[in-house]
Length: 338
Image (cartoon, rainbow, N blue to C red; front, side):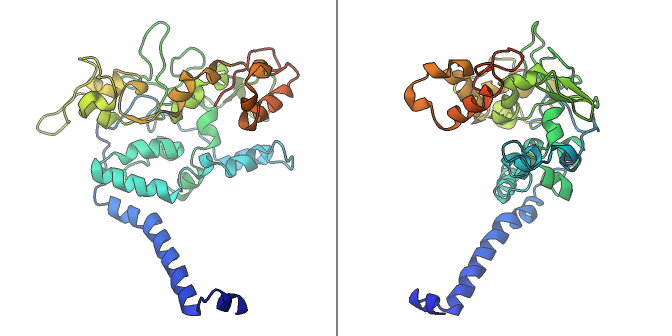
């Protein structure tokens, strides 16, 4: 009581301060669910749909709870399960600010919430629970698991250069060239339907099926989610939502309606890599355009002094444990990745 009297705060003031904060949290976390149901779509508009593995095409993603059986340890340096559960990936499906933005997006374009759910809870999206597009069909587990272990460890390179994921016409997340350019961005993921988990090492000894994946050593792997493009803006907005207008014939520009139906194959997302349209976030593109993405970890000593600190120092220190001066243990070159 002495403490509160010193601050001149009464019990009544404390009560209303707490009540105000509770009200704010209810507004941010709960109200968006109710407001978005007014606009939620039960069918995803073709303007929102994008290439990659589609809902219902794979069914073998396992819960992170199963991964905990082996990947939880008391090691303070490497505790994979513990670190994941404290990460933004784990919380991606239950962030109240995220759900508030979904509600706003739904009010702007009915059905756009599917794009948000696709990134933030891939397991629920692949299971077909992104409709209604306000997220009301998602389970508690969908939200709690966010970007789960299997989301990443079942990913294959969409250019089909290595392991082959499930991609059916017209949802092919590459340009069809030889070699193909993969579509990296907006969670246009190519997901394997095999039981094996994919990872960057050739000498793993897990208690489950596994395969080595070079894609999991590539910086493009991170770009699969960390470049975000809006396919609606990319097809319908002036300048396609980018600095450079898309080439004629690579987008449609017309809204699909009952009176004036359009073809999904003519939409911008099905004829262009994500970085060309609908700019929302370009975290990966900015990284890849910089010199750091081209810098070998083994060249750490050549970096300017002010860069030999923080995350770069931590990455170099961890990589050096392999005993190859920063390269992978098998001698493969390692770059400073995301």
